[in-house]
Length: 156
Image (cartoon, rainbow, N blue to C red; front, side):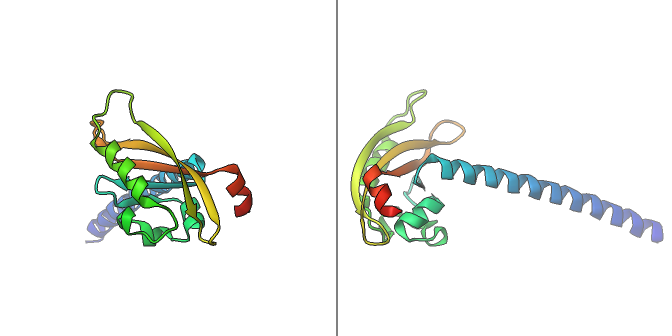
């Protein structure tokens, strides 16, 4: 009986070690993805094919005053932010519907005027890129928002 318990305990310890190792790998991958998102621009939002928010960067939280847990899972059109989302939605939808060619993933950019969370004007350049699935089909749209220089100074 003791041998069976010891054997079971050893198996459980091995499973626990494997889970801890995988948790560490996941944590490192999450930190890397977070770092990449923070490095892309002042604010980043990623939407799926239904235009629901998948990623809402810390910069987007700061700029628009909406926490990630409030934005993720919501349709972009339903977010109460000071950004004219109608134009964003139209461009994102066009990117999702357009036939992608090899190497094609970037759409056009647009300059928009919004109002940041502090009620100040925020002029932004927004660049769009397709989020591709493994088979290269559109899986969503990445929107990288950068404040234009004058607005960056007002933000600080």
